Amino acid sequence: MAFLFILLSFFRNLLLSRLGKRLEAMKILIISTSDKEGGAAIAAARLTSALYSSGVDVRMLVMHAETPDGLLGEICDTPLKKWEQRIVFYLERAEIYLRNGRDRGKLFHVSTARWGFDLNSHPLVEWADIIHLHWINQGFLSLKGLAGLSRKGKPVVWTLHDLWPATAICHHPRDCNRFAQEPACGYCPQINSHRENDLSRQIAQQKKRVFVSLQPIIVGCSHWIKERAATSSLLSTSNFYSIPNPIDTGFFHPIPREKARAELALEVTSPASYFLLFGAVRAHDYRKGIGELSRTLHILYKTKPEIRDHLKLLVFGQFTEEAAALLPPFQTFVLGYLSADRMLRVYNAADLFVTPSLEENLPNTIMEAMACGTPSLGFATGGIPEMINDDNLGHVSPYRSSEDMAEYIYNHWRLCRTPDGQPTAFALQQRRACRQSAKDRYDSSVVADLYKGLYDSLLE
Image (cartoon, rainbow, N blue to C red; front, side, top):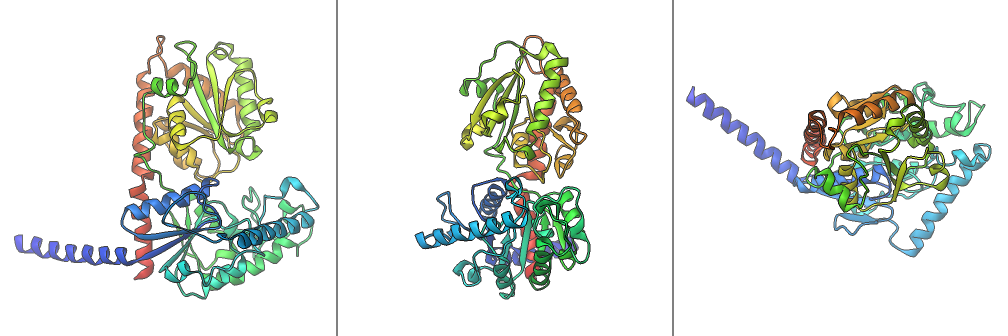
């Protein structure tokens, strides 16, 4: 028995040694339009950092580098390249505007990737063993550029932050499933089209040809987006995986609520004070649910008068005066764009984070709130039910049910504080459960290991 144990240990160590050498040798290039602007960019940058910290030789290539980082490469690093990018951006938007019936409201609902940069000969592309695409739109990587990458003969991984890679042109198809048919798309509602051979059909046919040679390995940040993308006729030759975005749970961590509120100079007017947090990069965007939030808070204000003097709304991100005017007269703190340090305190200051988004994948905001021990409330859309999969993590309301959302906020307010303002056992249990769930599922080391396993399988 002892001999068998020694033999098994020898082969195990030999296997781990060889695997470790492969991982140390692999060179990964993450490609993203930005390293900072928007949830997809933040997730890509966090993955780059997580992989680097776990020993992987990784670099990130972006259009405009917004943070000083030795791991970053930048395409638009000269005045000429920056002008080229502007021209490419406006060409794409101009075509969309002309083809969608001059509807400005839907100008950014779609992307064509007809124009962009060809990265085929970039030094970092030459250097890499694996190309890992993230969000590449708004004039960064064109279909021609994707075709160029396919000729490199290197494995291509593509993490989905929305469904654009699975559809012809739209980022969020909602209840449209035309991308699953063959041929894909046509009669596209996002460009107000009543024609079969419209812009979406034309781009779908181009994408199909590119993807046959590119053979991207598709990674959904959520099971929901992976399953939906797998129905796409454009990706019929791809393999699909589900790996979440990472978060640094060492940075996003619980701190005492009273301390966070004091550091943010938030007024606590009574032991029953209750801070509700809402926000996004563009918090006023209707897709982030400002209309649904407004209805939820109006229901609370009208039907639960006892909460009026105690509920305080915290809003971060861009938030217009028009959006603020939609809200009932609860005390509201519009915080604007915040540094990471202040976001840490805002998450910890809140009793509940609410995300009434109508279209979501795997929101970084829920992940960040969870890591700080703050429960979340959202609608049953996208990957949100996967994240809030336990009552101790918050609550998932039926899609667009402001009534259910209002009822949960009211009950949560009643249950999370004692009469003298101390957290109840229920609140403390939620706080512990949120923190543990974030560490178990989304910690940088956990996600890095999942990707390292995928990369290694592609290089065998």
